[in-house]
Length: 367
Ligand SMILES: C[S@@+](CC[C@H](N)C(=O)[O-])C[C@H]1O[C@@H](n2cnc3c(N)ncnc32)[C@H](O)[C@@H]1O
Image (cartoon, rainbow, N blue to C red; front, side, top):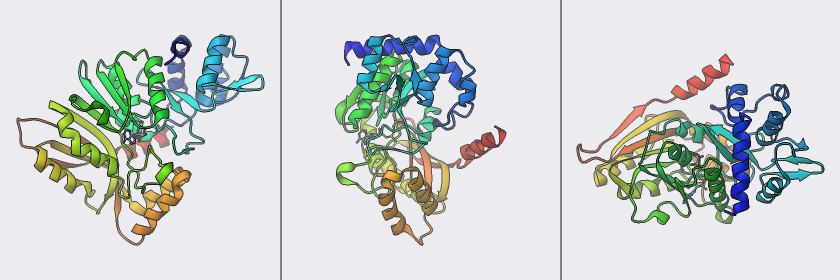
C-alpha cells in the first residue's frame, strides 16, 4: 500500500474514533448486528452535531455531503478519491462504493449493496452469514489463525484484535485490496498477513491452530469468465467447502480446530454433506460437529436467493428446474471440527435449526 494511503487511513481512523462513529451507529441502530444493511434513520442522524452528521452520512448512509474540509484536509480527500472511497459530485462528496460497518470494536470497510442486493459479480462479499459466523469466533491469543476466502477480512481481523497471528487468503483482487485497507484502518497490519491466492495454495507447508472460513456456498454451476466468485460453489453448493475439507487435516496443528459456515441440499432429516463428513472422519480421525441452523424447502430457498441476487438469477433458475417436483430440503449449517489424538473421531449431528431465525423474528417483533 502507498504511504499516502496508509496516512489517509490513519487519519480516517482518528476521525472515526474521535467522533464516536462506532458508538453512534450502534446506539442509533439496534438492528445493525442482525442485518448489516439496516440503516440508521436520517432524522436521528440530523439531530447530531455537524461533524458526526457528515461522517455518518458519508460512510454509513452513503449520501452526498457538501463541504467536508472541516473533517478532512484536501490531500486526504484526494487520496480517498483515488482509492474510490470517495467520489466527487459537483460541490459535494459521496462514498458511493464503500461503507464503514462497525463491528466488535472494529471499523470494517465493506462494498456497498444497492438496497441490500448484490450489484456486480466481483462484489466484495459481506452479509448476514459474515455476522453469524463472526459471533461464533473463539479467543485465540497468540494462536496462528487462517481465514480462507476472507472477503472484507472481517473474521481474521476480529481474531487479530484478540491477539492471534492471522493469515487471510482471498482470490478476488478487489477483496484482497479491501482486507489490506481494513487491517491498516484498524491498526492491525502487523498481525494480519494477506495473500492473494487460491485457498491453501499460498500457505503450503504451514500449520494453524485455528482455521475459519465462510466459503462460497451457493448452489450455482460455474458461470465461466463472469464467475460469481463470492458465492458460486457448483451445482450442490459444496465445491469450495469440499476442497477445504479434503485438505484441512494437513493444515491443522495437533490440537487445532476449524469453524465453517455453509449450506447445502439434503433429505428431510439431514444435509447430504453428513455422509461426506463421515468419510472424512474415517480417513483422518477428525472430530466433527455438524450443527444445523436452518432448514427450508430447497425450491423456496432458491426463490429467495433469486430475489436477493438478480445478477445470477438465470443460473439459480437452472438449479430450480433440476429439483422441481422433488422434496429436497436446503440446510444452512456450521461445521465445528477438531483434531485430537485423545479420542476417536466421529460426526455428530446437532439440530439447532431455527433458533437464530426465531430470535431474529422476536427481535423484529420487539423493535
Ligand atoms: C461468502 S464470501 C465470505 C467473505 C468473508 N469471509 C465473510 O465472512 O464476510 C466467500 C469469499 O471467498 C472468496 N473465494 C472464493 N473462492 C476462493 C478461493 N478458491 N480461494 C480463496 N478465496 C476464495 C470470495 O472471493 C469471497 O470473498
